[in-house]
Length: 280
Image 1 (cartoon, one colour):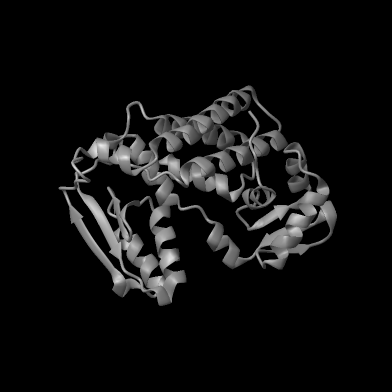
Image 2 (tube, one colour):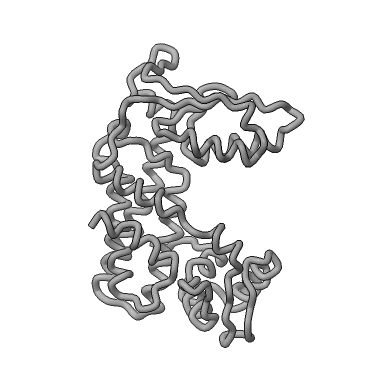
C-alpha cells in the first residue's frame, strides 16, 4: 500500500538530533519515495526562503541545518503521544465529566475568532452550537493558552458538567457517536493499520538503512494523517474493539523495530520511541 508523503515531510522527518539533514541521505530516501531531485531542490529552496533551514555546501554534498525557531515549531508533542498510548492501554480513565467552552468574539476580531475555533477543533472539541464546544478531556488550560495568545481570553467561558443532553440524547456513548465523526476517524486508522502491518513485516525481515528511513517517513506521514484529526475520546465512549488503538499499537511495534535497527536515528523517531519507552 503506497503512502502519499509531502516532500517537506521527508526533509523535516530526516532532521537529526543535531538539527541537520545530510543531503545525500535526503535525496536517496526521497528517490525511494518516487521524488525527483528537482522536486527535492525546489522544496529545500522554499524551506530556506521560509527561514526554516540554512544550507551549507551544494547538491548531495550539502548539509541542511534547521533553524532554532523551526526546530521548536516542528517538535512533536511527546506528552500528547504518551497520553494517547496510556489511554489506549487503559491507564487513563474517564470520570464522566464533560468540559465545555463557549466564546463570543466580536465581528471586529473575526480572524482571532476563526483562529480560536480552529484551535478548539484541533484540540478535539465538538460543536454543540455556534460558539459552544465540548470535550471529555480537561482541556481548559490548553484552550485558555490559545485564547490568551489570540488576545480574546476575556470572551471565553469555561464550564463542566456530568449532565449533558442534546435533544433527548443523554447517553455518553450515543452522544460521542453523534458529536464526533467516528466513522471517518475509524477509516483513517484502518488505513494506518494496514500501512503499519505491511511495514512491520518488512522491518522484521530486515532492510537497508535507506529502506528503513523510507518506511519510517511513510509511517510518520500516515500516523499524522490519522491522529491529528482524532479527538482521542476515552475508550468507554468508543466502539469496542476500537481500530484506533489497534492501529497505534501496530505503529508502536514499527517504531520499536526502527529504533532497534537504526544508527543515528533522526530526532523525530527518537522522540516517538522515547515517548513509548515507559509503556513497554
